[in-house]
Length: 309
Image 1 (cartoon, rainbow, N blue to C red):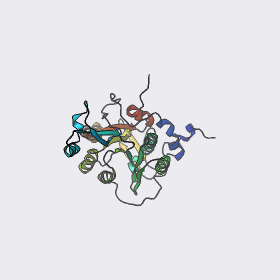
Image 2: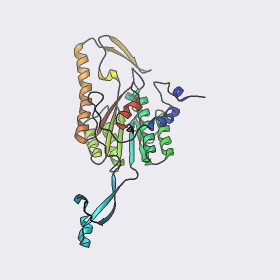
Image 3: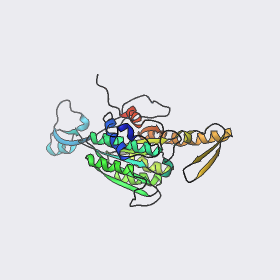
Image 4: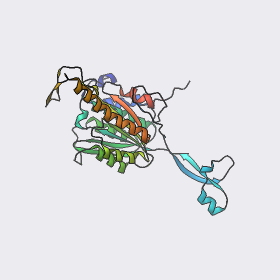
């Protein structure tokens, strides 16, 4: 018999059994943010709306009703003041966009960025299912896009995480360059107003065209940018000669010059800082996960359920 711990063994791949087992950790999460102090520099947390409110009916005005909810159309037609009554939406679409491009298959500590992304996406998918909401989204790579229409039920989650477990080898229908602009543009056409849209990526290639598309998504939806990063991407190691490889290619790295290390660090912080500023401006949620972080712990920092005392 294999235990849950035995399924978490590989730093370079993720299996279906591991992603299914994450359903237990998802019980500790709910897709509404808490107001917390950032646990690491530069982290930005917005207030997510959670499920929206939908119109139920109009009824005669009663003392204490919010005047902003007066139904002026019915009031004009009947000659008597009416108020709109709203109810919480029973469900909402949660769309998870997962980056499986080649730069995601890298790490010098912990696990590949892609493996972390798959675990994060699975946790979010299980949390969505347990809340009774619809789960959808897409997985994209150099081979193209695999799209999932928002649907309820456990089978929808299993279909999504099964594709996460074999995203590298699975053939897809559409081929092309998965630029960030194209990724956001596709999602803008898919996401209906009121959705929660989650992007799990290292956001390489984010540019002005990408920013315009993302701003359009954020105009009518809650958006979470979940940034995957590896420590070597943020800062070069101290002076020395290093060799990096992916099994096919080898890169020789000389970090002897202080100016090189400084410029490298500044470029990374400029790219990440731009995304963080955009999150503040558009009221999106920003969250980071390193390759040696525990994904469940990262998500609990803003989606953890409140403890009842």
